[in-house]
Length: 329
Image (cartoon, rainbow, N blue to C red; front, side):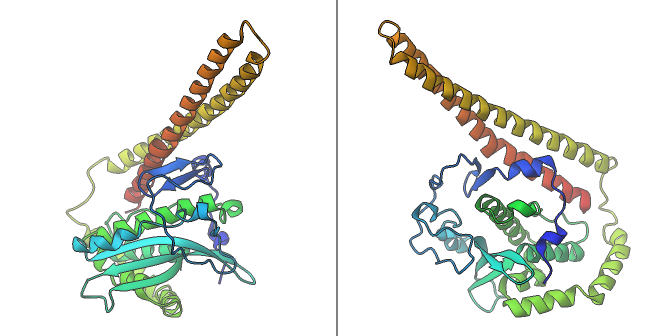
């Protein structure tokens, strides 16, 4: 099995910066402040699986929610017949390759499925295979984007895996919620097949037959999409929009970093004025008041940076990926 790192692409500045942030399953990304406290508004999971040897999950109480989603997702079967979630990343070490798989859990009442619940493990390139299979079977359809490829030196870090896990979860949920994509045989295979069966079918689909099918699909594409061509100037607009979104994302990341640096400097001033106030009798109260104001300013700058990272930057990055999907369809 080839190393996943062999297919990695050089990251741009924005993808490197995105590794310094973490997702919250309900509100998006949250700035990593170095704390291991659990994310707000997430439920406790006393039945967290014990990680196998080499697992990247830290079996610490503070990390119970870090790689888990709210298990009440099965309740959505009242309104949807196919529910999926991606969680529990686990590292696997081999002789020539180390890689990470994610648990993909499916609850369904759909008649095409033989059971009501499935649990399989898939790695990133399996998700990539699914995306490519959907692109072949639905030319002209905007396929949801996958999260960025890994950076070699960071691909096993908990922050990066959390970021990737939620990106894969979002990708898969968008696929199953799509009225056409949700019925694809490739999706059913991805969600239900056991490892050996899936590997064999995936290898089979990547052979000569897939290449011929891809070539025929490319030739038939203009006829299949005839009458539904993009408006004049749409490719140029998509390119300009993508460039502007990427630029805005870089600016937002820079502002957030500068705000965090400023917060740290104000915190140092707060400590200095607090120490000074302790050695002054007459000026002590005034210096303490100034130190308190500096502390409040430091907290405000830190909060502003976190809001920018958790709400603005992820949205911009996701829109950039969506524009790339539009350009590629």
